Image 1 (spheres, rainbow, N blue to C red):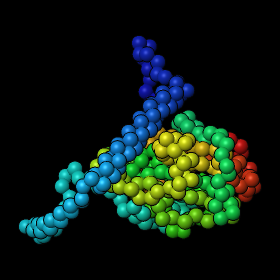
Image 2: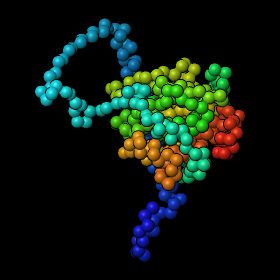
Image 3: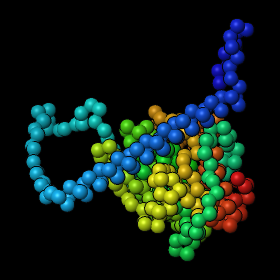
Image 4: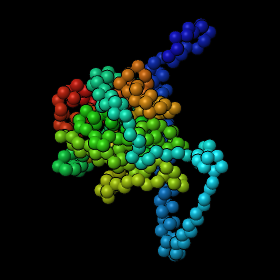
Length: 311
């Protein structure tokens, strides 16, 4: 907030509470728009797949392969044209070890003290059959690499999950789709998480590479996962299922706060509650830890769960 003096003739600036409400209202509108966009994409994808299925029955598929050799006069090196949509490798690019170590080591005190004014969503109770994998309670995550809401929540997810176990390999660096926010983030595709308390099952359904009016398919949920995801959300993401007891159906904060930032800039602000990005990610990570403690680990380890308290 500016420190500029207000003249008597000027209308008063909104207070902190009013500003928070305005920010939450804007964030909710953004989230609702993203959900509507996802559903429209799902419906378009379904129509396209149905049309392709019919076409494959009534007609033979003719594949024409044309090889075009283009010589570039300036040294023979080609470069993408201006405005070309770019995409990350599905598993992302490697993040420097020191940066990942920093994210894993955010002090619990920073998470506990983070202001919650920017949070717009929280996990809600559900009552499903317990999700288990390898004899442990399971945290199921369904997302997509193009999705800006997923891009926001993955930062908090990595910070929170790192308090309970380890990733090997570590998540790679990607960005949400260029036409959907272009937000730097992590991907859980091809990661493996190990914890003595619970399992983590990530399903990144698409890459961030456009394919017609949707994106290139990457992973598919199992039939059981698909049924749960469909019944609870209509196949929107992100979706986190905490052992059938809680679910999170949106990012906890608006991804717009991350737009225009570099990956390193976002990472450097996490743990610093004086910035909007740091406060939003830290507060979201705290809520995730509370949810995990209450549903998946029986409040273990005690040092972690007692420090963050109950949600």
